[in-house]
Amino acid sequence: MFKFLRDKLKDAVNLFKESAEEPEEVAEATNPPAKSFQKFKKEESKKTFIQIVKEKVATRKIDEEKFSELFWDIELALLENNVAVEVIEKIKADLKETIVDKPIQKTEYSGVVTSALKTSIKKLLSTESFDLIKKIAEHDKPYVIIFVGVNGVGKTTTIAKVANYLQKNNLKIILAAGDTWRAGSVEQLDEWAKKLKLPIVKGQYGADPASIAYDAISVAKSKKYDVVMIDTAGRQHKNINLMREMSKIIKVSKPNLKILVSESIVGNDAVEQATSFDMAIDIDGSILTKADVDERGGAILSIAYVTKKPILFLGTGQEIDNLEKFDPEKVIERLGL
Ligand code: GDP
Image 1 (tube, protein in one colour):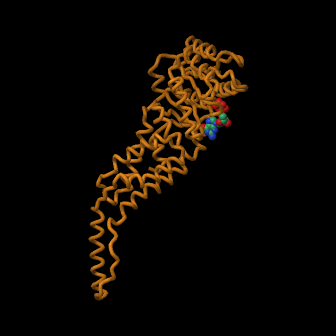
Image 2 (spheres, rainbow, N blue to C red):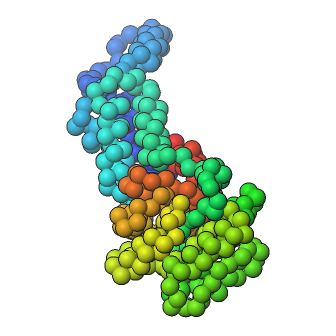
Image 3 (spheres, rainbow, N blue to C red):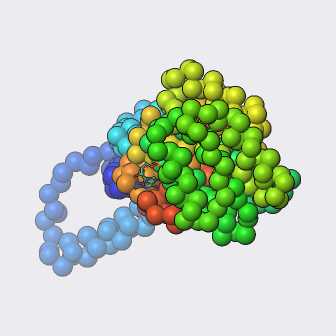
């Protein structure tokens, strides 16, 4: 995660530092004065000492034009790593506010830029801190969660991971195999249910997913389950009919939480998916899978800001425990900021 971005950001921040260290006026080259060697050396060391002190207190301001020039490398690093354009604009505006025309000690330039970058990225990621266990605890039972997303992003695996996480927190779960579209999907979820020893409500392929969701909720009510987790068919966000079908499942099941599962590795496409799903069903948050194989990380930095909805978890591998609660501090750490 952030393998490329980490080094590129470091180099880009250093440019600010180097620029602050540039002499304001280029001094004319002078020959050493014709003095005795001892005297010359003494004067040189005295001069150097004064220069050092001067440098320590000297400040430098960067004007808007210079800032834009220096920010270009940060901008490029972010673009190359799939960060959405509007997110880059936001980071630029934040940095500009902290840096442009502000007297900053020359020696502190990289610290100031790094810290401004850190603050800006943290703000982008912290839409709302989301504690799923707390949310469920505060709510009447059963708490209904629906998972939506494009095909193949890792939705079924993610449902199993989240179910495992909730189970470990002493919650009673029931699954609803609402993907009656893709061949093998019911069996796939059923397999996870067996591994995790979870009850599951299934239907025939082609059956109405809304009625499966409804049945699962009825069972949960009568048997006092804490959480119903509904799988849905993977759908392209551009497929209007499937998007409509999803709205019907939502109307019937009235979920407390609508989670979009997206792949972190597809970068800007994940952000585009999130925008479309959010427009169609007003998602409550997202889970980004395959973060373990995502070397860029642009979607992780962009999706929360663009949708204004939190990232709940990152999928970090194919195993059941490879689910990481999303933490902006960890992102900052991984970015080396
Ligand atoms: P679905 O079609 O969206 O339900 O996707 P699946 O759950 O069937 O997952 C598709 C593939 O992605 C499978 O091979 C999963 O093992 C894999 N996968 C899911 N989540 C992750 C993850 O976080 N990291 C990695 N590396 N692979 C994942």
